[in-house]
Image (cartoon, rainbow, N blue to C red; front, side, top):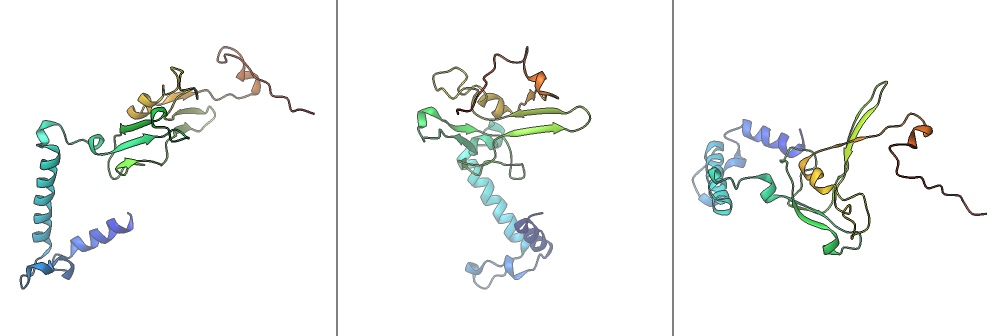
Length: 173
């Protein structure tokens, strides 16, 4: 449990704590239940004004939170901006509003005698903005899908049916 959550849990346990009193109300002394009830009513009213009624379907995390995958040169047309992301306040790496940085590579590895791995990253297989593969991974990344990774046991397994070609770099003399 993180510190703010732990403090809130402790505060919620004490319904008569002085922290619950709203000073602007003068002589009236509020308690936990008064403040929590008023806060929930205010939050619901605010959400209804901004997103409509809950039954209308507008209350989704992705409507409020977005990710931005920016091009290294910060050229907007070459990035992928305002992407709706799924999650919640307790999920790993939820976007804090309009996300601009954070973990993006997702990888799951099953260790054992036979290693199995899956991963995904936002972006594409190509660095060329004119290529159809420039942003071809973004949809799968947004959907939370993973690709199976090839995990070779030896260098000899790298060539063959899984490879389109080989590039050998030889240092100059």
